[in-house]
Length: 299
Image 1 (tube, rainbow, N blue to C red):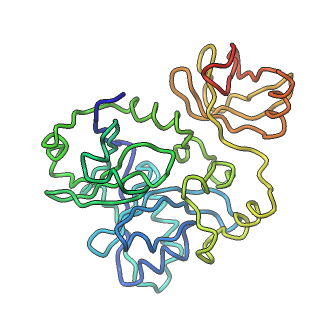
Image 2 (image 1 turned 90 degrees about the horizontal axis):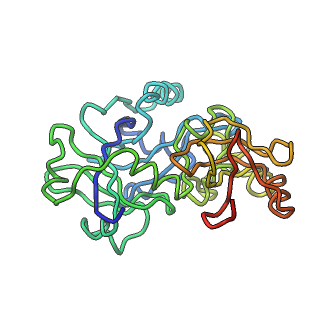
């Protein structure tokens, strides 16, 4: 895909976090440093259990002194409730702002230049004429931009810029090619760890920011080299296996399939068994399909 297109992310909602203590509140809970949001950048972060297991991931931007979290719409209420449990006496207001904002992705060669962000790094943000924000995806591997547009403005800003509508499959292809997990579709709630899913490379965790919920296990996993599984992109020969299908190597379970589209998928693989299989020339399989790590590998 080379033409620039916009894609409405219909499965995304927006949680507003406001109040005099909002910045301190978020900083003490989420996996990443939110200070850059006050410097005109978007941040990718996660909320974890006290044991360091995945609960939610989201983009955070600052708008008019408040914070807007681009999150899974189907789980927005759960995210708000989990934040609310930590609010206590803090001056923090949590509200569903999805009626006010729509989440967009903008993909295609030249998308960053279209909005003056071609020289900026991941997370760089710019205001949109007519309201809203557009920013480079803060996850370095993920191409393109994301935007929060006032819902009552429709798609006028995109159409005025000469950008045509794409579809969800365009975004899925780009995401899977980049090896980027899609929230709870790929990360099992209450079980997944950030290091298994590449959060350090995704700029989703800061190891120098200080304490946050789940920080101890996340840091221990990194510094003690305790990662045993890793999310990887694979090419699929045969019918695409459904998520959860075991990946096998010579009769031994080596992982499982996560999300996929057409002939590509993400798979959470055991590093030892997948490496042994690759070294021995043993194919990985999932259901009736054979998996490859490279588009040019022999079938």
